[in-house]
Length: 55
Image 1 (spheres, rainbow, N blue to C red):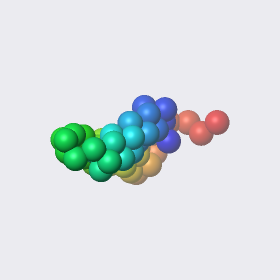
Image 2 (image 1 turned 180 degrees about the horizontal axis):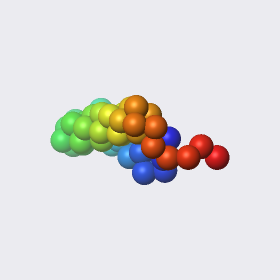
Image 3 (image 1 turned 90 degrees about the vertical axis):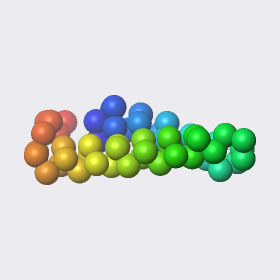
Image 4 (image 1 turned 90 degrees about the horizontal axis):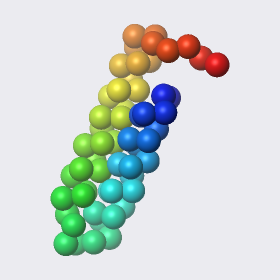
């Protein structure tokens, strides 16, 4: 996975956990979910298109 998608996935998981722990910050739950979904979609599209070289 490209670095951008890995970073988005990590940020999404952190925001998701923070959103679950803190009831006052429920918006972070949805932001985390959106970032995780976007990272997975981006990774899938990159795999389907065969983009990037594997080192």
